[in-house]
Image (cartoon, rainbow, N blue to C red; front, side):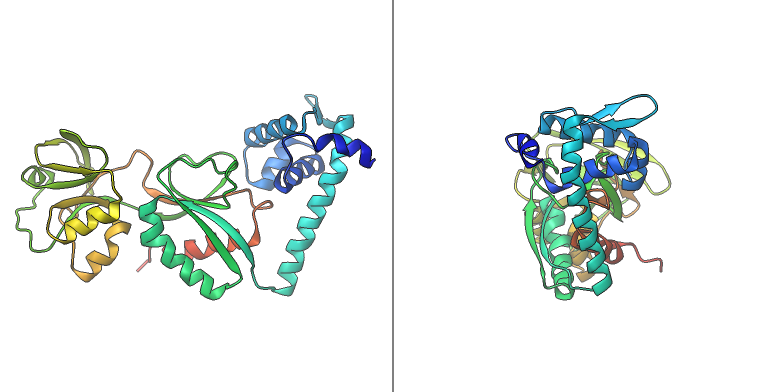
Length: 312
């Protein structure tokens, strides 16, 4: 039997998550049932199984309209996959039963502005409670491929999370216009920005189209030009320039929360915000619950409790 299994080793390599998913599909007897157990769509499970078969270099499942069976290579691999599943479930059960401290390394990704302003202090608080958990941080504006880059938790602004991942809503966000308190008015509406120096993250441009939305549902299209200061540097630097009185920064509220609380920045248009194409909520993305580590799940729970808007 060992010789039969060896034919899978020269392939791209099936990690524990892939083997556990395969075992769960076999155990469930259908993609639909496995999807319900994993909190995924049937299409997502089907795609992941196709990827696993491509990695294994063999057709593992024999599908018909009414049933799901195993091919000969599938039967051989299923024994290894079942052992991985059993070991994972035993480890999780032991951890829950013993109340053992969380441990291990988590690879996390976020955009730099959220990572520095929110995630770093959050991780410091989490690690005080769970000192055995270590972090590898990937702060980037690049769209990270979560599976291929081995990410445990991704913190993203998105209204359309990947189907293969479980999305937990953490906090809403709004992009507003902020400046130092000594800047004089009037600040009646977004039109008042036309005479201001505007600090914008991005490449140099001659004009900036903006689509504002008011709390009462009103919308205002605006094109600003002439007094734009656009930067490809990080958003923290732009916030610092606004704090120093250099201009008005367009930034998410989480980037300026401490400044607003301290009075070093003021939201000049509190009744207006700039909706983002990516969405208005920050989410935590993880692998399906049976596959994600206990430490990653604990971190998401911790983040949800700390970041959720207060009801008061």
